[in-house]
Each structure stands twice: as C-alpha cells, then as structure tokens.
Amino acid sequence: MSDVLYIGIAGLGCIALLSCQAKKWYMLWVVLAVFAAVIIWKQLLPAGPVAQLLPAIVVMFLLPGFLVLELAFPALARKIGPLERGPLLFGLSMGIWTLIAAVAYRAQLSSDLVIGGVLVGDILGLVAIFITMFRYKDSKPLPEENDQLDYVKLSYFICLIVILLIVAGVVGFSAEFQRYDFDSSFHLAGYHKIADNVKIIGGNAFLGPEYSYLTHYIAHPWYLVFGLSARLAHTNVAWLYVCLATILTPLFFLSFYSLLKVLTKDNWIAIIGTLLVIGPWVSKMALSWGPPMGTFYLQFLPYPGTYTQLILFPLWLAYCFRYIRSRTSEEWAVVVLLAIAAMGGHPECLLVVPYSIGILFIVSMFFLTTRRDRIKTLALVAVIVIFAAIIAYLTLNPVGKE
Image 1: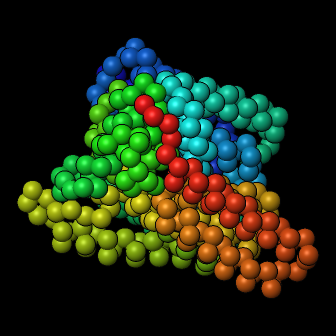
Image 2: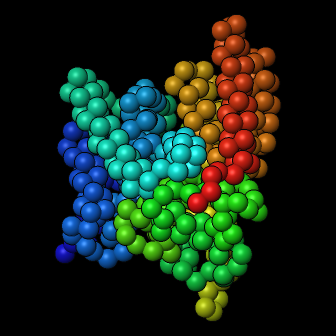
Image 3: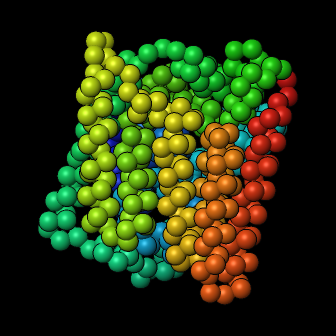
C-alpha cells in the first residue's frame, strides 16, 4: 500500500511541476511529495526501493529548479510549455547543486545536514510560491507563438509523450544489464562514497582524498546529489541509477525539443523534429539488443559526462539563442545558471562553454541595437568565464583529508 502511495504522490507531484497552470491545488501535490520524502528519510513508513526513490528524485533533482524558475524567473515560467519545463527544471537544479557542492565538499558538511537543508529550503520555497499565488491571483500562462494545439497537433503531442514513456521504460529496464567496466565501477564507487558516509568527503572513491587520479571527480556535484538522494531514500545507488536512466531519457529528447523550438520558433515543427530524432535512437537500441542485453548509450545517462553532453549542453544552447533573441534579464541569469551546471558536470565544458558563448554572443553583438545590450552581453560572457575559472580551481584542488 505504501508503494502505491509514494508512487502516486511522486507522479502527481511531477505533473504539477511540469504544469504551466498556476493553481494552488497543483502545488499541494508537490507539498505532499516533500512530506513523503521526509517520511521516507525518517523511515516512518517503509516501502520498496523504487517507491522510496521517486519522491526523493522529485525533491532533489527537480524541485530546486522549479523553485528557482517560479520565484526568480516568473515571466519565463509563464512563457515556456510543459515539454520545455522538464529539462529546464533539471538543468536549474544541477546549477544549484553545483553551488551547494562548492561549499559542502570544502566544509565537509554532514550528509544529513545537507539533506535536511535542502528539504527545509524546498518547504520554504513552496511557502513563498503560495504567498505569491495568493498575491497575484490572475497570473496565467502566456504561451508563445505557435504554441496553440489543434486536434492534429494534439495527437502528435500525445504520440510524442507515449513514445518517450515507452523508450524510457525500455532504457531503464536495460540499464540493469549493461556491461560492467571501469566507468561503471568508478562512478558507482563515487556514488557509494557519498551515500554511505556521515560526512561529505571528496577524493578518489577507490584510493581516498589524498590521491588525484581523475581529479575532475574529486568534488563532483553529481556524486553529491546522487549519493544524498540514495541516502535519503535508504536504497542502494544501483536502484537509483536504474530510476535515473528511465527519467533522464525523455529529458534528453526534450532538451533537443527545446533547442529545436527556439531555432524554428514553431512548436509544431519542434514536435515533429523530436519524433524524427527518436527514430535512429530506437533503431540503434533494437540493434544492440542481445543476450543478456546489449549496452546502449542512453543507459549511461546517469553518468556525469553523458547527461552533461546530451541534456545540459543542448539545453544551455537553447537558452543562449533565447537570450540572443529577447535579451531579457531573466534569460541572462538562466544562461549563467545552466552554464554553471554544464561546467560543473564535466571538465570538457570548462572549455567548450566559454568558447561557445564567446563565439555566439560576440558575433551576435554586431546585430544588437543598443549600447546597453552590448554591455549586458559582454558582462554575460565575462561572468561565465569567471565561473569557469572558479569551478576549474575547485575541481583541480583536492579537498581535505578524511
């Protein structure tokens, strides 16, 4: 019974987070998801591993981004559609976790202190949203151009959702049977190091904090949120890996949808394009299927390098183009936070993100009309370069000893 309760609450909470409708009763499901996570953390009502993980995933991987979006970027929150919200909530959440990791690893904070702090922050953020909703009762979503769906477009929309759910289920199931190699053992050891320790300690998961092999994983934000989520749910990190492989698969395709929608300025073309993109991935998955089961690239989405390349970087590009088009302060800040998430996800992005933003924005400045826009764009490039230097320093300098 508790399994059904937790799964139902987590599912309805996700629907509420992805909804563009500012309705108070939607937020009640999010509040219940937070309280379900607290109950699971305190082991007051035990359930199966997957049922315990789902509320933890909602409050750790999606809700921080939702709170930032609704409270800091309300105009953007009212413009984007439900298909765009999922990747954006995940990206903003990882930006927040990158900032949390910078403090948690250096100070070697208690794992339970960070978990409790995040849950308290979630509750306070939801209270602030409720206050905002009562204050602005007439707030309604502002759909962008070409977002209105007729019956034909709605059928394609439903088709996309159904196909994404099927592919996600298959990837999640097959993730249990992928090959076991160095990446698998190294990353799973890193997740266990956070999940099993009372304090948050960085360093090599095999050799200890004094050794610098693969230095970019010494104090990694993904290890932090992954390990703390498994600790909150009192489950093995392998179960969380399977759940995240399932959840991150649709986010990958929807991040491409977000980029395609910005480039084409047409929701209908973006849906069709995303459906076309899914085809080659499904065919590759079918060809790699074998006894006991072939390894498929989407199975690696819960690894830092993979989710950064397939979700965060395309998503960041999408909001770079949004900023070039609109040049609003909200999208300026979103670009910075998504850049922090991507650069914290993998060291390749420490070079690729500043290089890409330099090319995109400096070239686009020639088409900007005002001196203020040019200054704002140069400031954006400078801020991201500064954050790249800070993240590189924190990554390449080992944290304290155990």
